[in-house]
Amino acid sequence: MASISNLPNLTPATSAGSSRSSSSSSVLPRSFITLRTLNSKLSSSSHLSLRYNQTSRPSLLTTLHDLYEKEGQSPWYDNLCRPVTDLLPFIARGVRGVTSNPAIFQKAISTSNAYNDQFRTLVESGKDIESAYWELVVKDIQDACKLFEPIYDQTEAEDGYVSVEVSPMLADDTKGTVEAAKYLHKVVNRRNVYIKIPATAPCVPSIRDVIASGISVNVTLIFSIARYEAVIDAYLDGLEASGLDDLSRVTSVASFFVSRVDTLMDKMLEKIGTPEALDLRGKAAVAQAALAYKLYQKKFSGPRWEALVKKGAKKQRLLWASTSVKNPAYSDTLYVAPLIGPDTVSTMPDQALEAFIDHGTVKRTIDENVSEAEGFTVHWRSWE
Image (cartoon, rainbow, N blue to C red; front, side):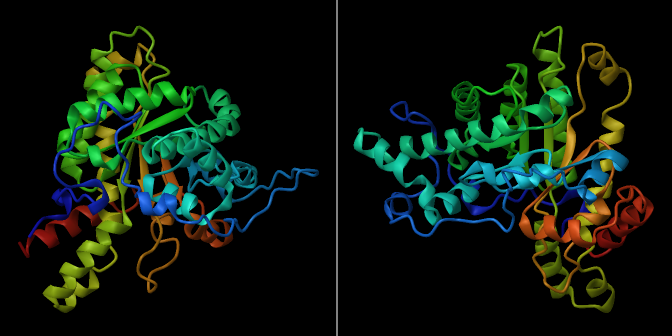
């Protein structure tokens, strides 16, 4: 049985599979979105729970503002759909960036009429489904980047990013991922775009090469401490290999997935079935995150890091992803409230975001129980 500090590198079905290289005939590598999905009749318009008042444009002080100003954690929003102006009320409430993924775009495109006109025009002009999909995605990313540019400028490239992911079909393709990342960066052509690359074993070298090319990266789908350390090393290697004298505009976040870890571990604990094992349900993810933060502090210190700092390098911030609660028995802020700490990002979907705004407490918590997290790891190893 795997220890908490060395969980297997889990990859969702949409991001795994046999190795596939990109097709030279495609504008971009194939996405997982299907012909049936895009050809289906796009139905009722999507909507958000908030609407932006174009006349008053209120600045609403919320716990999200406190999260950033008092504890140094950047709250991001894990969703994107048209019209992107629906992001404005979130920005007013303290959101400082946006993450997206192919599943988010699949839902947006297939449930909103907002994409119909552009999609119809693209198809009528002779675009294949794959190329049409990417043009829809690129437009949304470009428009969202424009909204977050002021934050990007105000923070000197530390915040205000919008993330777009390379095709999950490339999760086992090192070279194809590098090519896709470079092309996406070129076609989006926005200073504050993050190119998302999965932390699969074949893509860790891709991260290094893309960073070395001067492209900022959101490394996604990190599930274990061991893989996280490999991601940090890829970032440092990339910075050193870039040859740039000024590294201040090459940044990165490492997206550590939390709730999915508990989903896996809880099933294993339930199989063990002892009272001690059952008492540990819902605790693995937060414990591992605390250990990840400890590793982050260690790796971004010392002579090697200080040499990069002299060239303007910025730390690769930890980003807590998969922050929605999968088990309704758990607190709806379980994967936000215990993971607050400086130089981190928490990206939240609607449920987690609204819950934290409504009743979240802002205080540094990420390293409050490191010794307990380490003890939890030892306790788990006793069952191996």
